[in-house]
Amino acid sequence: MKELKDRILNEGKVLPGDIIKLDGFLNHKVDCQFMQRIADEFATIFDIESVDILLTAEASGIALTAVCAAKWGKPMIYAKKAKSDNIEGGLYQSEIYSYTYKKHVTQIVSKEWLKAGQRVLILDDFMANGEAVRGLTDLVAQAGADLEGIGIAVEKGFQGGGARLRDAGFNYHALAVIEKAAPGHIEFREE
Amino acid sequence: MKELKDRILNEGKVLPGDIIKLDGFLNHKVDCQFMQRIADEFATIFDIESVDILLTAEASGIALTAVCAAKWGKPMIYAKKAKSDNIEGGLYQSEIYSYTYKKHVTQIVSKEWLKAGQRVLILDDFMANGEAVRGLTDLVAQAGADLEGIGIAVEKGFQGGGARLRDAGFNYHALAVIEKAAPGHIEFREE
Image (cartoon, rainbow over all chains, first blue to last red):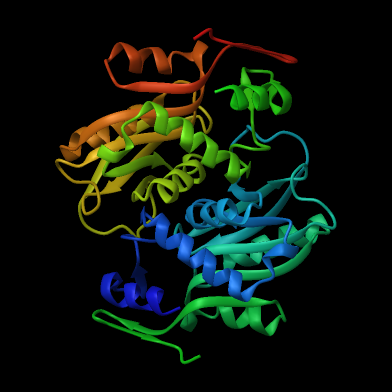
């Protein structure tokens, strides 16, 4: 997606440790009208009509997914990080490793809202190692729901998460795949 | 807001410990088209034209605020819970007590995105003790930004957060104020 790549080049910052900061429009300050155009781009890739519910992970995927959900008229659900005691009863749980927080995190979704037979589209703003998305696919499988696809705005292509999802045969698409990143230099994968 | 109160009555659950669960449409599974109607309601209360940026707190405020931001054509920013090492440089920080997680939490916002003179509207989906919102008002003050108002979808009126914000003279509005809650019974404050 050209506009996304342009904004990554113009506004992104690469920090030591391969950290790519897009916090001026994607995941701290968020340009939600731009998120609407990202929704339009996803709609050219996925069969949105056939999707029952959008699934993302707390916290940074929520803004993009909420804008998509409003635009497409679909409900969304976000997997929470465990510890809140406000989710009663049955839960699907998946264990992931958060490289951001350097610890294991448990993602939870209420069995009340993710159900067998639902057609699920997973969305997230950013993917590096792909742990959050792997956890979400696991939640979908536990629920017996059908995974229609996985849409990611920005993939760090050199950290393996996208490759694993493609190899696993998922209907996986990222709108911008960063192949190389160094301070002052970002290179995208050719499409 | 009548539709909001109706949904609270029809879909909300009160659990022991005064926990009011609205996780089927507000803060786990989210009805983002309904969030658009909440945005319309906020727009009758606040002077949205004069607002520069929307501010909310991770994580449950993000979906509602993102939908408002997309609808109104305004940027949004969400205060993060500290610990991510992906936010470099200058930060505004506020310490709050999370009753949900029963521990102190540090909210952070990058100085890069919240600036002196900006007109800020704080939005959140839910308020009980008001600690998250108190932290956000503190971040706005630290930045030297101007707080235009505080909009909350659902206030637990019996836990004091709203009263403190009204008493402090903020331009504070909640679309539904729950006065009493017990299993099977929810009562709203008269307007």
